[in-house]
Image (cartoon, helix red, strand yellow):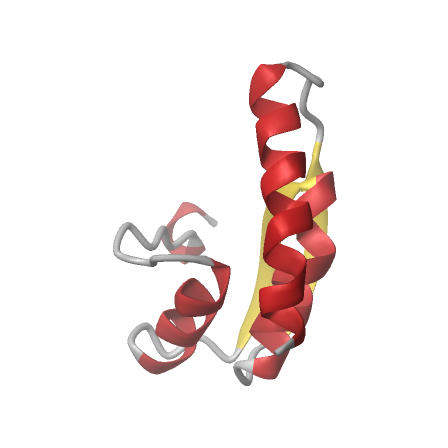
Length: 82
């Protein structure tokens, strides 16, 4: 349902958004929708933040935005491992 969709406009990064979802919005269970290159890390970070998270990869074209995001994902992965 549309009322169940929550966007976090104040989240600085994926970890921050997961923590805010749990602490600020009271989210305990979530279905995350993101780009395929990002969804595994997003699910792992939300689970670490205390959310029972499942992920769905959105279909997206491999345009310039996709390549930028994929490159950013490579650089963000070590931060998530901490």
